[in-house]
Image (cartoon, rainbow, N blue to C red; front, side, top):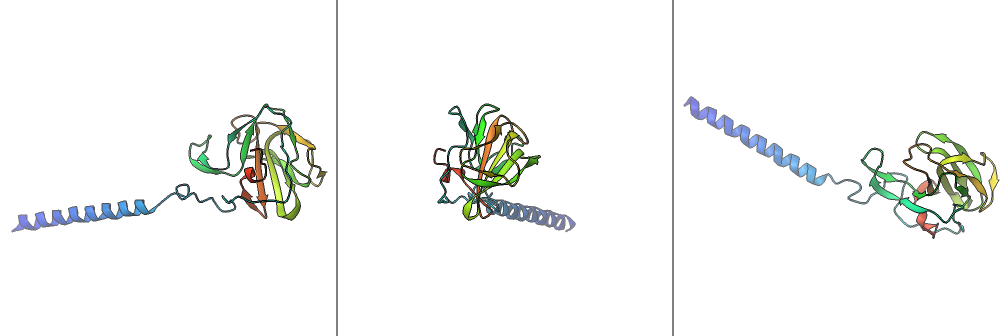
Length: 184
């Protein structure tokens, strides 16, 4: 009689383990990544935003290429999935960076991730951010005109090569810069 009880107890453990594995598989199937859903993180949008502003090409060269687009990608430094909040324009270090449109320099500083960067404020809550620059030619509070040199391309901060990281914000939300820079 004792043997039968032990067998039944063992069978109960197998059933419990099978149920636990079934629940774990169901939970994993329900957990879908933000990338799979194509959902951006807070403060970013995948919508195309139209603007009244006229933006011009921000580089003083024709020798450039898009090295990274806006959206989900595999981070080149960590290898993990991450949302890229701008577009990267690869070109030679030292290439002149031009203001895309008229604005006021809201920030001109250095950060660990962006390196040397500046943020220009434009009309109606629009802002452009230029990052990984070698040199900044302007300071916070200065007024700049479209096409005016504001710095040079570099490889500062979290960068794997010389490029201009370009972001576009409207009322604090980041949008794909290709929506306003029609050359992208």
